[in-house]
Image (tube, rainbow, N blue to C red; front, side, top):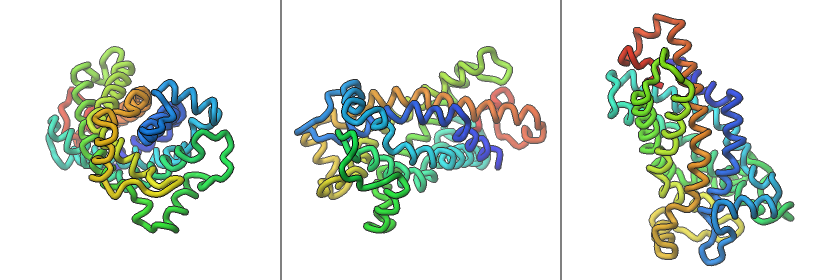
Length: 307
């Protein structure tokens, strides 16, 4: 149904959605820097030191490198995710935890087509000019220029670098995302007539986002390393297995948790505002169009669940 796609678009372009990117992007930059830094010559000791170092060495703008990519892709990704999940729930028929997971997983898989190139450009921009306030030589002018240059040099395969790890991360990750949100909203009692509905939706959305990231975070570390590989030098990894092998051998299990703190700090506010906005929009539209309620394969008391 088009309503789910519209709700996703609103979740991406509304003021709080854009604000979520503005607030969350510095945490993402810190995450990527911590994930890909050399263990032999580490630049950063932890999350706070990374923040401090970037601001001191590259100014506040250093935290916002690569922000153009998620700003451009946010609307499309949210539209695909919420539209696909809503339609998948209608195809599956009954509203069960398993179907919530499967519908979310399907949505996560489909949006990888946009997510992977978007995150490749974001990662390359975030790594550009590390430690320099004004880089003497910029390889990329902006996110679009980054993708164009990669395509010219490496073709379609180049702009889809990290696609396999993106699929491995996003497919189960979005399954957990929607399953956790559905479980939490049911537990908290997020019916349209419930008291404190907005705080409850914000809490459920934020916690669902954190649960999703925790469930697949090690894969994100490998994805970031593969997408950043070759920036400013020769490639270090031959593929996913080689990246995992080298990372484990040199750094042990801790390598798969690098940047997790900043990721969770970012995940809560961004996903809280997105989920709350989409849910409230769907609640409002369904309350004002009785004909739509007959089409929803949902329990009557839970009119928020199928997003």
